[in-house]
Length: 280
Image 1 (cartoon, helix red, strand yellow):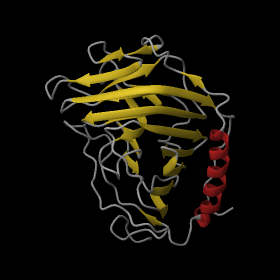
Image 2: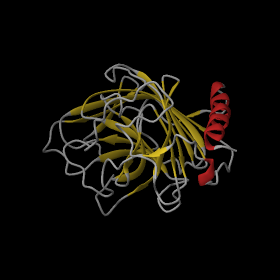
Image 3: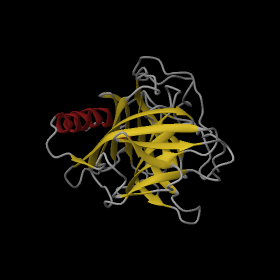
Image 4: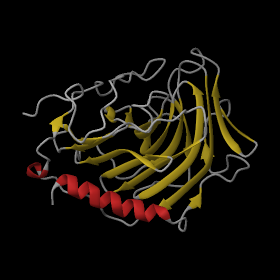
């Protein structure tokens, strides 16, 4: 099956799975942080909402996280309503703790929550590959780690200072992010050396400028095992082209994530020359 057709069919299945509310369980009890682990100086519960705050650049030496201690997640759909102000934040999933960095440090896949539309609800790999897929892109990563842009559309734009529902769907090596029910990214990650098929869930507090993030209605639904898609280079669409690197792996984060600010992609399924290099 052609990669583009495969992505479309998987997305249809995953979307249909997410329509029903049965099978979802709350990860937050609305009262306290039982079942979660974090720096108590940064995280509280106020009026039934998880609240994370920082006071400024000197407070943290590294990004810290509110970690769910209910176990690892594999194939799942996760929903949460979030609003933020100040520095950016994000939802970690299929991630791992990094005690060598410091307590409550986490690395791995992140559904970014960022005021820049291209970066909001994108895939950012904390302490790893950096920006992987931006809002409005469908990407396939081949086994050698090359990212191929296979389709794109206008980024889903919202005011992150208002409440919005973020959704993460993970089935095998296929990931989908949504913002208020609209797909922001579609990723099939064939890089076995770097992709993750299971790990922890966490929410980010970013070092640097003062920030506030509010989180509620955190719901998780487990999906069936399996779903890892095999790679076939011949199945890449004719218009696919490799995406240039936007951040070196392992770069130390500064006061704010060193995320590229590319020109927003046009509403077309043809890759834009401004964001990609010619196909070799």
